[in-house]
Structure formats: C-alpha cells, structure tokens
Image (cartoon, protein in one colour):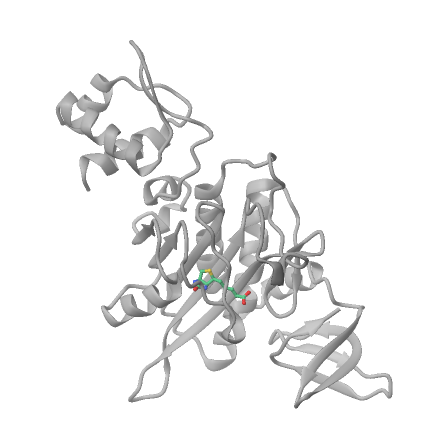
Length: 320
Ligand code: BTN
C-alpha cells in the first residue's frame, strides 16, 4: 500500500472528523511531508479534503468518490482482504473482469469504475454510465455450482442488490423478472451476468456478475429518458456509494454461498413487480400475453394464457 492509500484509509475511517498531520504521520510511520504530498494527490483525484488550521485534515461528509479504502471499511470481516479495484474511467468493468480471469483473478475480485465509456447491457444493448453518478461494478465468481444453481446467480444477485439498497438507504425496490430493479416504475439497476467456460471441459469456470446502478444520474439519453431512473432525486442525494458498493458485495457473496437453499427466491417473489399482473413477452418473432402466476425454485416465470395454457419461461424480456 502507498502512503496515499494509507492516508485515504484513515480519512475514510474518520470521515467528517479532523485528524492532524502529526497524528497521520505517527500512525502511518511516515514524515509529515509525505502526508502532505499524499493529501495533495488525493485532492487532485477529486477527494473533498478540508485543511483546517491547527486541527488538520478532514474528508468532507459530502465526499462520495469510490475507493477501495472506502468500500473495504464496510465489507464483512471474511471479505476484507478481497481485491477491490476502482477505475476512474474504463470501457466496461465486465470486459476488464474477463481479462482479469485470464490472469487468474481470484473468487470475489471486484472491479468498479466511476465512468464506463462503453458499458454493456443485456441483448447487445449499452448501459449508460456517466461519471460519479452510479455504481458500475463487476464481481468475479468461481462458483463451484451445478448447472441448475449457476443459472440462478443473476436472480440471486438481483435480490442481493435490492437488499443492499434497503439496508443502506431504507428504500425498498421492486424486481422485474428476470433481473431489473425498479423504483417508482423506473429502472434503476440492470445486471449482466457473463459466464467464462473452460474450452477443454466445457464447464463454467468463472462468472462475471456486472451490476449497473443509477444513484444520482441527473439526466438520461432520449431513448431511455422515460424508463430509466435513479435511487435519489436531484438535490436529495446521500453520500453512500462506498457503503452501498460494499453491501452489494457482502450480499452477492453471502447469497451465493447459500444458493442451493433457494431462500432468496421468497424475497425475490415478495419484491416482484409482475406477479399477479398481466404481462406481454416476445418469443419466436411474436408477442404473447398472459398472467404471471408464480416464480418457481429455479427462477423460471410461470405464465398462464387466457386459454388456460401454462408456460414456463426460463429467459426473455417481458413488459407489464
Ligand atoms: C442491463 O440492464 O441490460 C444490464 C446492465 C448491466 C450494466 C453493468 S455496469 C457494470 C457492468 N459492466 C458492464 O459493461 N455492464 C455491467
């Protein structure tokens, strides 16, 4: 770790409070000049650090930049040592995660970015990822699951994100099958899960769970401006991006450990915005209409058509 990382760790730990240069230097076993240089580098990165004469330095409560130090503070003890890498700007955290898998990244490695230049969505779409507005995160999993359980990773991740949002903000969100998260009828989060298979055995070697969450996005491109939303309205933001990122990581890893119990399916159903509703879905080049009756233990959607025909959907996109 560099002096800069160590100073940031102490400032994040004491967010909103002042620590003197002397105290920082003594605690970290470095000179006051080294502390001063680290503070300047952090300011250049955009951290809101106030220097108060005779009192020292303080990281402002309103400083909301993502950092591995800020995230690590809120990780469960068992996950504190996991690699967490934060980029200022990147094409796509999922693409980076897949590169890292080729370089033997370990289970639980996390990649985040303040901005994505070509964020990827499902079905070849993009994901709008403007700077410092959301959480764009990929978690690398080496799941050791059977095929039935591994298809449930995305469903489990949607529950993990919804619970993390509630714990951090008190806001209860809804889940639209398969894995979109909604608040006030607007999509605030999408999840793109990509599997990396072992070419020789054909088995799933690693899975990248990519999560894109709009926290305080002020405006959206025209094609999604009526459907996309953010957790916070303009001017009502809370500065919780590091904590929320950590809670998402905690939850995704814990739910995964217990995936075979299917406990998360109950929460998924409670938060579903489509159960009991009439829905439309597109398949084999045509639209179908039906009644969304249930979600089974494999995350499949059970739909009844008006003629009584029952259909079990394993994937796809629906409209309500
Ligand atoms: C969707 O709604 O279609 C899924 C969107 C997934 C977006 C996230 S943002 C982090 C990760 N990196 C990407 O390029 N995509 C996922």
